[in-house]
Image (cartoon, rainbow, N blue to C red):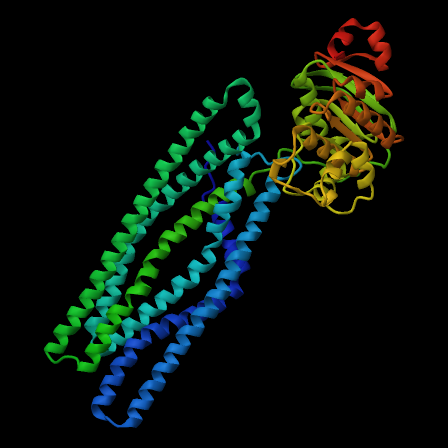
Amino acid sequence: MKTPDTRRPRPGSEILKTALRRNIGAMTWGTVLMGLYQAGETAFPIALGLIVEHTMQDRGPGALALSIGALAVIITTVSLSWRFGMRILQKANTTEAHRWRVRVADCGLEPVARDAGLKSGEVLTIATEDADQTADIIEVMPLLISSLVAVLVAAVALGLADIRLGLLVIVGTALILSVLSVMSRRIGSSTREQQARVARAGAKVADLITGLRPLHGFGGNHAAFRSYRKVSTEAKHQAITVAGVNGAYTGTATALNAALAAGVTLTAGWLAFNGHISVGELVMAVGLAQFIMEPLKLFSDMPKYVMMARASAERMALVLAAPPMAEHGPERPAAGGGLEIDCVRYGALRALKFQVPAGEFVAIAAYQPRAAADLAAILAVKVPPHAYEGAVRVSGEELAALSIEAVRAHMLVNPYDGEIFAGTLRTNIDPSGTSGTVAEAVEASMLTDVVALHRDGLDHGVRDRGANLSGGQRQRLSLARALAADSDILVLHDPTTAVDAVTEQLIARNIAKLRRGRTTVVITSSPALLDAADRVLVLDEGVITAEDTHRNLLAGDEEYCLAVAR
């Protein structure tokens, strides 16, 4: 058995190192400023002790003015260093979180998805919560160092008064951190499990939102809701567990810090009572015992946040370190080419073979919906070439030899359930704002009535997933987007299933007119689209069983007539 290479760093650790390395400048300035803040906070009780000592010896107005001036400098340093230090760190934190969100989203939206074994809802959780928690390491490290500065300054100051006070702070801090570091490991594992359960609940919600209408249609919504309630309850119980662990951690940290502060105060009182330290040093020790609570609390919280950041980074690594499902070549297809399917075997497809020459409008009548879906998935490059037998050629070049970006730019596959985004009609039709055929696409898709209904026209607002549009309007909007892209090869999968027969007839004629001279493939059972095509291919049991015009097939093929006639 092969021994794993334990020297190789875990991907989660690499993510944290990358975040720290990329923000070293901001973290340096943040550490300096937050160190000044903590040093100023700690210097305040030290200054009070020195002032008491000084004023007891010299009670003149000069000593009072000097004392007020020293306090003003300390307060100003504390205020400005905190303000600018946190501004630098939070800006770096927010920017880094955004970078990781973009990285995760980029992997999730790759033309060929990475094989991470995660659903879209889980990827969404990783791109939001986990990205934020991972970026928190940028704030955690400077605050950890600045808190250490405050503890060391307090220990040195107390040590100068009496070595026993300084040793008490150092030993007490070490003991506190030892106890809390053990507890922080439990927080890390619990947080990792909580994030996984929340991600699963998010994935279930995404599935429910997508399939809510069909679920209502056949009465499966109650079973789906029970399924969601189960994963949601699991996530809730795990969140309660994490909250309990965090509560125990915080309570223990507060109790230990308070015990250390009380120990310093009582020890200082005993030393002053026995004449080992002066009254001014007693005031300083009591003040430091109070002020040291904040840096000690901050210092003791840091292991928890480090473990949470590591857990989130390891979850992000599930997406970022996952290999793509397929590696594609660097070639680009020639402009204006055709499409060829050569003996493809995949899913419901059985040695499928056909050719669409450049500029032809071909309709494919698929008797089995599964075969239509498998063909659309292959053409959309959602299935890696190694996952099926045979070859797909675009402009004479095999799909595996072409870059994904080049294929997508050359051949557009518009699914029957194309997403509608929050924005306007115009931004949904032309997301990049570069299409010169928006007006023609709106007219060809018969979206003109929707545009005319609203005073803002194409600038009419659209809600997320097209919630303020009917099913037919959403489908026509998706079709308009596909037509406006004006790609060399356009593949449409059931583009008119939600529109009435009259509108469908007009859309079919408009598509044939707008796409004349460019390669167009429509996978459909619509008589209107089949009639508008130059040629119809019958896809039955995974192979092409007939080929002719729609009208000839109607006249001579009874099975075809039964399958497509309405």
